[in-house]
Image (cartoon, rainbow over the protein chains, first blue to last red):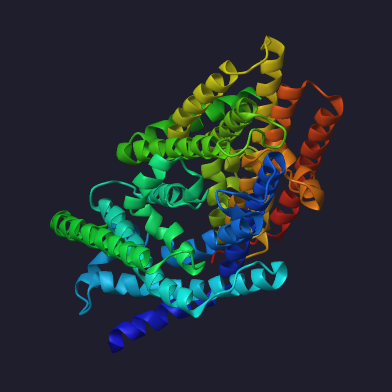
Length: 265
Length: 262
């Protein structure tokens, strides 16, 4: 436990030591996504008329779009390439003799990043509520439901990412696959447009896929739009996908290590 | 001029042979960009389930605009993006020396050395989407109007390159460039939507100081709404202004460059 805590604290220190870059990336990403969505939906509401679209008022939709980059940052955790880079340069070897599991170390890094992003999420939310006086209040019940969902969604995203990164045992570059994964989860998870705007058949299909659990589901939990039964089902589906990807990850790890020589490129 | 064209031919040959050494990555990258195109098409399909017009354009007109920005994106990804990605690293590590001692323009060498062969394949797909969008146009196409649109998209790609460069050039005075790339890619999102949806001071900024709305929207407007000289003049004036600013900042940056690595 002490070793795990040490890794976690070390990762936190690393994040905090590059403060300017960290906050610049945060502000740029959140403001641009929110800004584009603000003007896009303002134009759509103006062209179409009416108070709401698919149950979303303009204010509600803006809150959703503010939460998208904030929640995605918490779920995504660290940047891409943290496993594949070590496979390519051979530095994976040193972890193999550590007394702690390699994936536990990597997950602690992910958790450290997620912790900092969680603080940003609540700062962003507080700022939005202060400036826009949106018809939304954060209930303790919604918060109590969201935190375990964020934890499980982050775990699922981490496991899927690690699966893709482990393809580095065979492929000469996996950066593009990781980008593809992020693009897919952004669109199919409801990050680009809320899932309520998709055709009915697409909503039914997407509900069963893992992407929804990485974006839309945590946001809806935070907004208090998820009842008890849906929360339990959603959490169950998240953990089921995480378990399935963990199984395939274990297989990839065993096969990959057999061919790994530690020389590096 | 011929010397530079010959040199660019060499750059292309080396880049293509290097790209084909890593074939899996080559096809992954092609597939990644195709997914990006698919996402843009799906996005506008879903948007037009909710509204008949966006920024004054119907779905066919918006798809012509969208296919235009895919072409702009594909051109810059093919020709300059890889190079600009590594420019801050070269400054930070002191590797810029290697480019400065060459008997050719250092900006030319740095901006065009790596030709992205995989993105060239995607450029062909983007041109296909562009042709498909034009074939659905509800007005007659003329050779002159399509040629003007293509020329304006090329100019838009040049502006896109210059904005990327101008945003990363402060790396001469800062320690790291990854935050600067993040700013550019965040701002690029404004290029992906029709310019008329933006209003107020944000619109003024997006058509002058940070002219992301000029790269694909203005060419589409000239094509869809007819040639208007004031729009064309505005486009050319801003492009010239950004080009002048780049030359000034580049020279100032080189004076501040110490060759020291970190």
